[in-house]
Image (tube, rainbow, N blue to C red; front, side, top):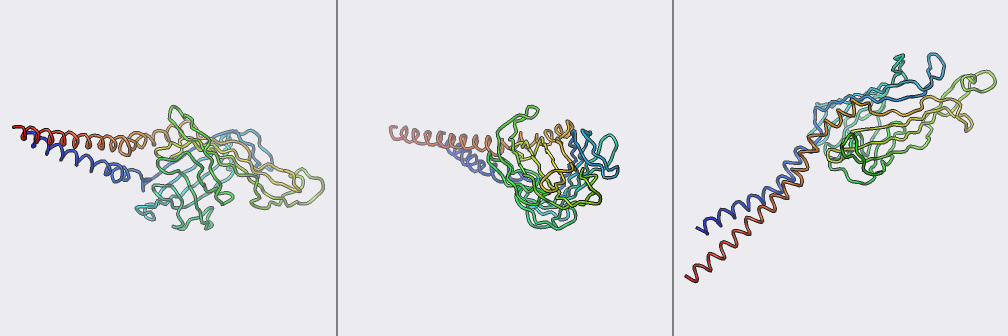
Length: 306
């Protein structure tokens, strides 16, 4: 009888020991991938000062909305790489005046979130090779700095890890990317608009800087909150003569709530499959085998004494 029970326990133990790595690798890995049919609209809001080029006037402290839509290109994606198309439209919420618009296309690794050089990657319809993190961070994000591609200056700028915070009750890793004032273009404008004396036009440098903050839910690697402090100006002879766009835009309440909801499955299921259940299976399997060994040893001793 003891031998039969021991054999059954050994079989159960081996099964549990074999199941543990399967749960950690195969089962969890199948869920640790960005969906190929991904679609996500977001809205950032804030008070912004901007230059209205139509009315040739500076609009101060306007309520501004940045509407962004990301849609996966299923046909261009693969099992390992998902291709995203993004369109962003910034407008004055009161007057509906369109301040700016941008579009972007890139492929990124479905697990790590790192950009991949493929799939006709572009920014504002111009081909741009992109690298580093693109939109999201790796599943099970680590508490360290990450290279992150900045689309306006079109280069990798580190996202620095700055600690752990809660966003509406959900733990998040805070990362901050700082882009120092950088010349991105030239602007020709009337001297009167630039506040300069004299007639005619003046050519200045269009400069851009931003402080971008992501609050990343670490299991899914997805942002559940985001803030961007924009500052875009025209500089003539080292002096800012015109503000083109300045202020902070941040996820509105609905966008933040949707982002938290979208991360819920990853937050609850992946830790179980990746850590808790495999560890439990290892302990249980080792326990079954240990009990079986004890039964076999004590059974033999009993037989010998008999």
